[in-house]
Length: 191
Length: 379
Image 1: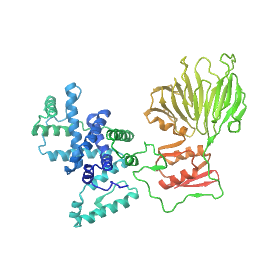
Image 2: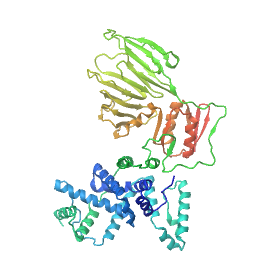
Image 3: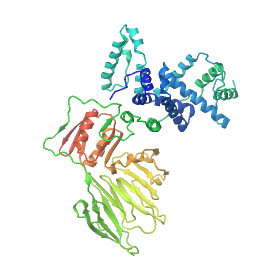
Image 4: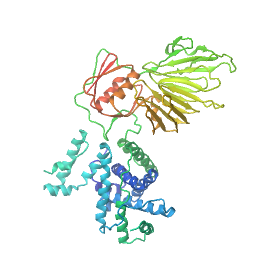
């Protein structure tokens, strides 16, 4: 059985765009926890959060053809959750104006005009939530974070060929994993 | 910025009418809104993850591969054979296998249908030794052993005026289990090292039985709404036509009751604290301090034993060995540092003990030695 544990999100997305069910299952495995936790944080409702994340993945699969265009899959997923939450909240407040408290402590909000900065901030916020999970549940997610240093970037840092970095990473991951280490650092390669 | 401004922005957003600036403002607001952590239990997370996947794969019936998902999923799931260490991928087999069996000892066979019936007068009957058919007459009840090896109580005579409230006790030894039908049709399954004391007929008033160990009930509903009560240690459980599992072993730290269907009312006799359970709930009373907790569980897991399986759910080695000692009738001794590993998975109750122990060895930092009817657990 082919294992998708060692490929980056972008590679995974490429496979999903090609109708690969297993790759989709792997993506779900990587991201479900963190997306659900974030949805719960914002919605405070188990059923709503669950429906939201469910719809997100259903929609993702039905539009898988265009998945390959995203450079950063994680950011794409985080933005999807955010947009769905915003839509849901917008919808709810029409029904009941007093249902939600939208107040923030500091209501003098200065808009961050660069959407990429907003994206990065959102990613930082969402990913910090992973530390609330027990180590074993973090493992899959953290591994995929490491894998998403593109092989190209590592190669540039170390003056290695991209190909040799790829095989280094795979080899190292295999050895480390059979010893049940909970956190795998690609930073091993950085002296 | 007022709350109303946010509301207006949201409305525009929803209608697709927000411009770049407005989106920027809204998305910035979003970053600051509801930032306090919202705790979720890992169990709930795993359960939801599984349930959502089920729904997603149903919507795409075109050969969605669930087998891989099953392989990667948590121990809340039922896995047909073998143990699963708490990791995503199967373990490597250790090079040096320290598993040792004393060559002359027989392998320890699993338990079977064995029980002892104590009649009202004190007379004891070993059920595995008697023939099928009539075992005894107790007051107005005919006690017989069926061809499936169950014990049943049937009222011979509905208007019997036998006034004595005769009590019988059915008990299982280590390595035993038994199925009993009470005179009202209530079905009772006893796990190993358990017992039930019950009247041979149910007149007016409550139907009351007392148990020790682990017992699963399917209570018969009575047209006269006669309540059924189970006393297990300091738990008093009141039921009205329902299916539930009660557990109170001496070496357990808490008494528990798991409800599958119907409704039960649980009371701690010592403190008087009580609660009513709905299906899918489990109530626990901590023996040490009478702490009473209720949580949602998968209730079918509580009765795996009745269906012929062990189901381990993130349990340490001591908890697992307790269960092994009761079913295989072995004593357990621990030497040295004992691993804090947690195990999960299902295994058939008809397997020999050595098979199960071998699996545990492969998966965790634990070694076993079987010497006659004793198991020694080391690191």
